[in-house]
Length: 374
Image 1 (cartoon, rainbow, N blue to C red):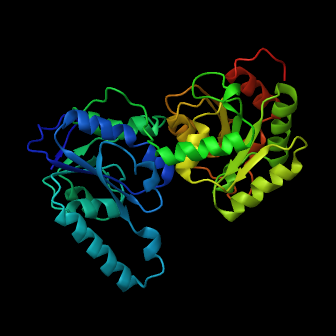
Image 2 (cartoon, rainbow, N blue to C red):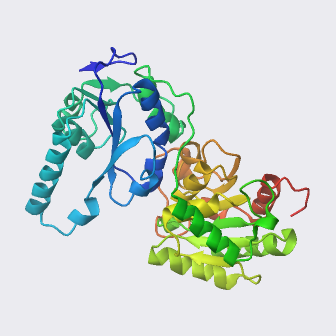
Image 3 (spheres, one colour):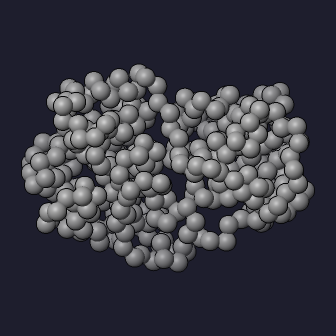
């Protein structure tokens, strides 16, 4: 096992497994690594292991041989013993595939032991530096020094592991590939709202803004009244239709409906009605995405949609929209400044409340390249 930034040449790589056992947005932010590995090992078959419920970010990727789903949610109802047996059986299924290389982008205990149990000759990760179970670093064959820049974007952090072993990306953009059925559903929805093709501004883009004001972590959300006021300003002042969306979580839907009820201009609603990939196909045709730090923010960026993002308790340097024109609205807060203090997670954060309606209006006008006073 070697701790280095310049590892020895990897030989006879025929099967590679990437591991990212995190959330939806985290998985999407790893996708530049897929193409980098393909460019480095052009004859290798690449598979990806993710938590169930996040596989939509990868299911149509043309460079992936297989997407494996760890049944984390399905195991929650099991007893400790039954869960241990189920997890061991899953690990054996990984082992049967005889991977040559494991690239662990998770940096967590489960990913470490699954990679070790796989029997892969090469097991690559960032050095855990004492985090996790005792002796965890011995489960890997090649370790890279973790990034020393706390503001490094997560995409750069993921790619940094590969760069440490001389695998450099040619194109660091995210890739979320969609099925024809997703695009057809988006066209059906937008045509149904009267957003016809003759209103297109540029190829593949229609005259509407998609507003996703919620996250399943509700402390990330901007205040409802300001969301409603921004929607009304866009529709009444800018004459651009707004389409409001949210995820399937019932608390998210309740909050989105509260915002909708506060509006005067009746935005179009797709609250809780789309799958992730259908949502992506809709967002791909929007002039602008507006929303909070969430998976849809990253999905919109993956489709090249300019983005206005509201940030508060999560580090905007690490999680801002990637490789797309964007504006981040953020105010200083102890929890984001020193990364040790914590705000009240049960209510809207002070840093979110500090973002004004006027700031949001100005940002929207700038991103739309409009000469108009808020």
